[in-house]
Image 1 (cartoon, helix red, strand yellow):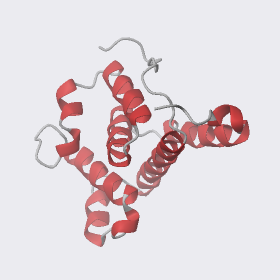
Image 2: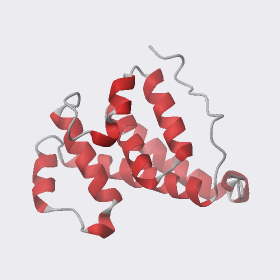
Image 3: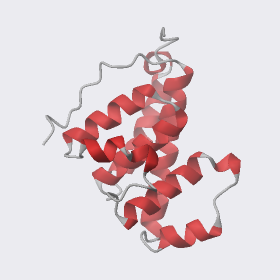
Image 4: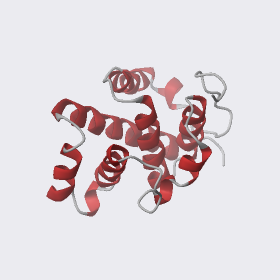
Length: 155
């Protein structure tokens, strides 16, 4: 696949705006491990190879296990995720696929058991951000494979 254009160069202002949202997400106080899981799951749903490459590398560099990354697409059947992670993953799927049926009330009730109001808004912003990045990278066919995690070697 050939990259269509480099959106960072074509519109530095748009890229800066996306980075501003990302900065807010990382200042939210949500766990890095949780953020990498939801970013990876949304990227799986959206078929974004660039983001999958990035977030699986970042997750591994931050100490995530390969098993949990391999099982992420089947998280409902895998026993290795906490209740909080499961709630976040279900929320990620619903928000990512919002056009397919909205966000059910029972899911909202479940996710609120694990996230306070601020955390839930921040989690939702993180999902919005990764969906935006996915759309930029898929639409412009960003070349995949050269990302190196700034978080150092896997621990």
